[in-house]
Length: 482
Image 1: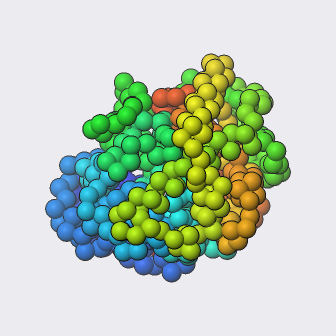
Image 2: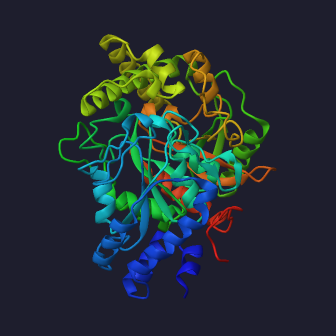
Image 3: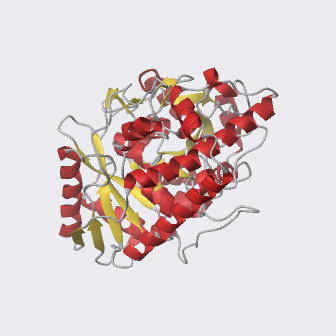
C-alpha cells in the first residue's frame, strides 16, 4: 500500500505493525510525514522547530520491533520538555536561542518506545493560555476552521494530529492543556494522574503537581499503549501514582461494567453555552444507551476562590522560571521581553510569600480530598470540556497588560471552567470527540475518574470510540491523499 494512504487511515499502533512486518521502512515513513508537515504547515503554523536531519539519522538506526511504536514519527511540545540539541523556547521570546544539552525523561521514554522525533510543536508563552498564540510563533490555527484557535497550550500537537500529519504528538497539561486542544481539534486527549509520568530531570513537579506530560492521539489505543510505554516514576521523583496491575491497553479489550456517572453542566459564575450543554447531554445519552447510569449533580467547588489559589501557584512558579532564565543567560529578564498575559500574572502573583504559596498548595490538596469523598459515590464525572465553541484567533491573545488578574481569569476560565479542577485534584481526565457544532467545530466531552483509575477512562473511551467513531471525520485542512 502507498505510505501516504497508510498515513491517511492508520493510527500509530497500525503504522508500527507495518514497520514490524518489514512492509514499510522507517525512513520512508519519515519522509512521508515530512511531506505532510510541509503540505499543511503554511495554513496551521503548528511546528516550532523542524528536526529533520536528526530524525533521518534516528530513522536509519530504527529497528523494527524494538519498541511499541518503532519507526513512527512524532513531535515534542516546546514547553519545559527539553529535546537534546533542539531549541526550547517555551513559547517565549525571552529564551532567545537557548538549546538543551539534555533530555526530559519522558522524551527519552518516547524514544525508547521506538518513536522518531522530527520536530517540536508550538505552545503559548509558558503554557498559560488556552489558545496557542505567541509573539514568538504567532497563532496556531484550527484545521476545522483556520479562523479559530487550535486550543492551548498543546495546540500545535492537536492541530497536527487532527490534520492527519502524525497519529499522535506529545503534550503536557497543567490546567487543561491536553484536553482543551483535543476538544478544539476533534481528537483524543488524556491527562494522567498526578505522579504517573516522569517530570524530571528539569522539573520536580510542575505547578505544585498540577502539570503532567502525555499526548494527544487519534485513537484511544495509541494513548493507552503510549502510557504503558512511558508510565512510572523517574529517578528521584518526589512521589508516584499507583501503576495498574494490567497494561492499560487491556482495558480496551472489553466494555466497562455499568458505570455511575455524575453529570455537571455548569461550574462557577460563568454560563455554559447552549451548544456546550447540548454536546454534553448528547454524550450523556450515548453513555446511557451503553448501559451506564448518568445523574445530574452540582460539584462542591467555589470556582473563583479555587482559581485564585491556582494562580498563586502559577504566579510563584512563573517568577521562579523567569529568575532561573535570568541566571542561565547571565542577565535578568525584562518585563518588555514577556507577553502581556505573563506580565499580569507576575504583577499580581509573582511576589507572593512562601506562606501564601504553601497555603495555596494546602488549599488545592484539601480540594482533592473533598473530590475524592465525592467520588466515593461515582465512577466518573462528565462535563463539557469547554463552555463554548473553539474561540476565534485573537480572542485570547492578550495585548493589554492593564487588565487585572481577575479580568484575565474571567477571560480564560469562562471559556474553560472545568478542566483545571482535575489538575488540582490529581485525577485522570480525558476529552473525547463526540460532538461537532452547527458551524462544524468539534466540542469534546470531558470525563474524570478517581485518582489512579486511568483504566476506567480507557475502557469507556474505547466503548465510545466503537459506538461513535471519530477517525473518519477529517477537517478541511488535512494532509490526506484520500
